[in-house]
Image 1: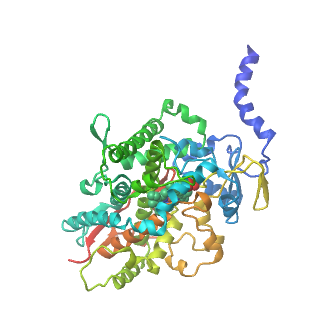
Image 2: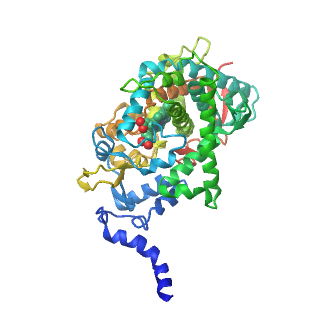
Image 3: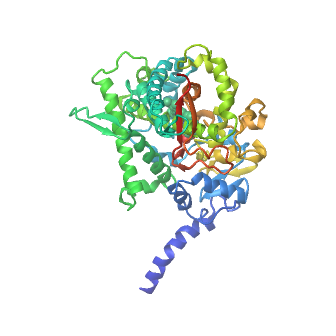
Amino acid sequence: MAFTILLIALFPVLYYLLPYLADDKKLRRFPSPFPAAFSEFWLFYQARRGRRYLAVHAAHEKYGRFVRVQPKHVSVADSAAIPAIYGHGTGFTKSEYYDSFVSIARGLFNTRDRAEHTRKRKTVSHIFSTKSVLQFEPFIHHNLELLAKQWNKMSDRPDLPGGFHKLDCLHYFNYLAFDIISDLTFGAPFGMLESCKDEAAVKDPRTGKVTTAPAIEVLNRRGEVSGTLGCVPWVKKYAKYIPDKFFTQGIKAVENLAGIAIARVSERLDHGKGAGREDLLKKLMDGRDGDGNPLGRKETEAEALTMLIAGSDTTSNTLCSLMFWVLRTPGVLQTLQKELDAALSPHGEWEIPRYGAVKDLPYLRAVINETLRIHSTSSLGLPRLVPPEGATVCGEFFTGGTVLSVPAYTIHHSTEVWGENAEEFVPERWFDLTALQKRSFIPFSTGPRACVGQNLAEIEMTTIVATVFSGWEWKFAEGELQGLPGAELNTCEGFLRKPLGVEVGVKRRRA
Ligand code: HEM
């Protein structure tokens, strides 16, 4: 009896200690915050708190460029590791982390098998060629017109000193990004810009019953819970039994989100709604792999869901943090507006700018790039599995099955790369970039798993930022934040680094 009790008491110690001592992946040589080398739950805990990137960043500041963040996972804060881990032909694949993001079926984002990913990517990538995404511009334009109507109405009802109207810009960037991606992918916008509410109509294709779901909220929950469970993937099976709303609501969110995509795809495929439109769904349906095969029904639903997830709050979170940094940094708003005014014929009547008129504006581009660097919407180290034969990265050999990642936030904030002003928002740095800085800028990742929607994201952000700052005046709602060195953007990390909101005042620039 005493022996059994002893054994039970010792079990956790042996469970975590023995593998550590056995060290089959030879990782004990790397420093690690306690107890990350013993248990996967250290990273899980950091992700649950929404501060994984910060904990890893702090660990790198303390221990240097190699940090063991899980028993089989080493984070490498060195730009030289980027091509070695993420580049073409390295043989690295996505790790088990991505299993927790699977709902309907594996989509482009969470497919781990290399051959399967290549097949899917061939089917989808033509949709995002520069030429193809230009066809999406009218959808962006149309939704910007709806946004302009709302902001103009607000401008007519000032409630802040100086004729400004108060709003949280995160909400409006979310409505805009979700309506654009829904318009593009599902044949119609969710209607958030019309209602100014986080509401997506979902029609049950069998019963015809229409319900609503808060798509933005659901997507947030889903990113947080999947990003946490991904750190210990076997927990996913039991997540709904964990007495923590974070998990129970998160699991429900995953189902709701899939429901939105399934119902919307069904409206097109089964009821012909929006048929004939040159949108993303049509292109998905027309896509063929290397053998000429189209995507199946489940795959089409999964890819439509992937686009909704990958193409919505990535853009809106980036835009919200851009607003913060533009207002926070003295001189930036004025320089940006000067450039926009010169390009957009200030004497004519203002209208929503065409992408062609603003795509080559250097300061606009620099502001977007500097936001992608300093905010790092994708901030965590994207985990990759070392191929069976092992790999040498930055002079260290790693055996097959080890997980490696390069922490994007840490690389984007490295003083070795960006200089002593790495923590400052300096758009001008983009006019004279070093080769090292170019190699170290990874907001869309790189290699075969880099963002397939980058061209679309660029068109969207360029047109939206040009519209926002040429059409309206902005200030922080609290006024006094402007220019204060200590003013921080409050964020929380799920899969993405998300601002919690930025309250601003808006005022139409031209009568
Ligand atoms: C500012 C906006 C965006 C940022 C910062 C961003 C960033 C990223 C990053 C870092 C990845 C790699 C993820 C990983 O390896 O786990 C990625 C992948 C992906 N992105 Fe984006 N993205 C943005 C916008 C978009 C848009 C607009 C779309 C499409 C509508 C899109 C679709 C995708 C897809 C499908 C993948 C998976 C690609 C694959 O694994 O082959 N993204 N994105």
